[in-house]
Image (cartoon, rainbow, N blue to C red; front, side, top):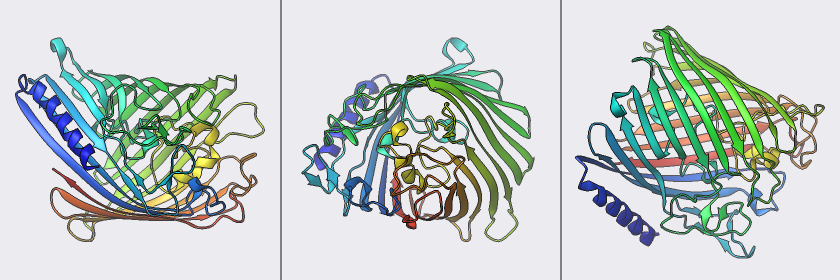
Length: 466
């Protein structure tokens, strides 16, 4: 691992040095994130622990990032960022390599280039900004709340989020703009070299030829996303997304190709400074390569009220999430597709229970949000300076009953998924150092088999940014 980090630093130094002759400014940065996680009854809700992949997990993970933002002039800049995240498993789960015998506690990981893009602002004095290359759609670049577009590489967890994309942002006014984006994602990174090899498990579940699996299949997408502010109180964000998911060439699961159109609208309306509503609705339609027709709906609505004059300055959110499920009596497939948002949205625990439910669509990658009705309440507060607290209760239902799923985990009869309780505490020690504790409990109901047990997810984290 020490050699890998030194190799990464050397590579970044060479890249930065080669461009420094033309640069007028450099902003070098680093980020370290250390996590401990404990998964108890997550993937099969404790109903099947004989298979290694279904076993409970207790592990440490260290993500290290190093970057340089290079400014050539007021219009042109370049970002280069390296990333790696080795993990150490303490059991009972372990890393199984391709001979199906070699068991490893340590996942050495590869050093990857997870950001490499060129920014060009207002070329030829046009009302247009261009970003070309490997980039994240996070922070100020997030599309809405990340409901459909957030993580381009769900296969490696939260190590990377990048998209290989070309983005053009057309400014219609100071408040209104439209983005045009073309992107292409691969099952493993084939566009840029890795500086240190990962393992090879031989079946493409977690690794493909010494590189991490990033997606369930090769993917292509085009989308246009508008941001309009017709009045000070209202923000409207209409969009159209086309996504193609190819037949998987390396997965052991038969996943047909998919062609999906998405037309949606997100809106935020502020009644007052402390009261607002957020909502989004999307219609999905298309087909699989086997001829199956696809029709689905998805959306959410949240009413958010802040109480700035109360102790701890709480904010209360009451909301509802709807993701259509597949009607087992229909010849069509009505199941919602989360597109590029196979990541923790409203909680983290549930994304792992979705693995066996959707493995013929998602492959061995968590986070395929679908078939869900979820009323929820969330409270955020700051009881003391630099400390924030989040508590949430979520009641989960299935939109449709399932069919032919493994009976050791699923009842294939009920629609009550169960109850989820979530708590997160964040503390900011300094401007550069912060920590976090997260705990979730899920109590399953009749959507799952009678043998399903209560699941627990725990995470402790500390991170430093330079």
